[in-house]
Length: 373
Ligand SMILES: [Zn+2]
Image (cartoon, rainbow, N blue to C red; front, side):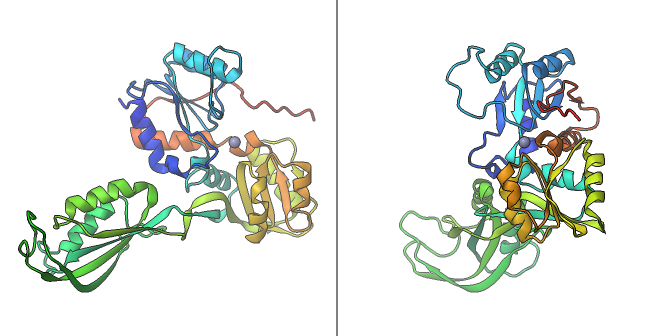
């Protein structure tokens, strides 16, 4: 049976914590990382009632999208709902884990799921992030490329296994360039090539691979383990490249263009919303941008991507003006735009721990917004 730590590791493989926004607080909110998971209750938000439901249904983990602890807590007296939630969880040995903007910012996360529900095709990240990638260069002796002596191949395979060499949907990506390295081993060294105190020149291959910055420790460990040299020469350079697989929002195309009113009807039907707040727009809708949750910050990106419609939640009055005439800005509600996040959690857990692993959807209603229409 997996522990809470195993569960966190599984989720963070898809949604690494370093991909969360700077203001966020995703990850384990409370609970013992070494506790064995009896069952997981999935919800968008965690309240004392959700924790009680978890206990009643035999779950000792509540998995949520929104972190319960968002601002630092100075006391736990039960004065606020956040405090009561944490106290109830601790009293009942329930762990709470949140995957928030780190799950918004990855493929297969909140926005891909919403795009899938709307039937969008050719889905990509709306606003890719930069600063998430690094380039590693290292120098390996150039040996004949038979299986046993292919040192650069051995080093590369170790780097790939540790998470390097992935560019979008391509894996095992590298660049090799031959050259000549020189060095003089110092006193007390045990060089793989040459002798202490004697200047040496070696035909080497310069290897280059890209890697996610947050995986640098694992990749450098793999490099040191696989490289034949006592002192491994390498350079790790942070890149400003956009990472097309990491970032906010998503954009894709409907299979066929449809009139604006028909698109709003599609939103109501697929998202179960009674009302869509929107800007006036007359042209057909084909390209659709979206962002689960409060996504007004991406109105400019949606316009820049040539979207005919932008679907999100929590849009303020003045923010609607930013879209007028350019696209149909549709506010479907915060909860409604993220309601399918639970399916992402369920699919990740059953893929990782098997179909018999106990995963339940919370029945406690947590959307604080009600419609009177
Ligand atoms: Zn949200």
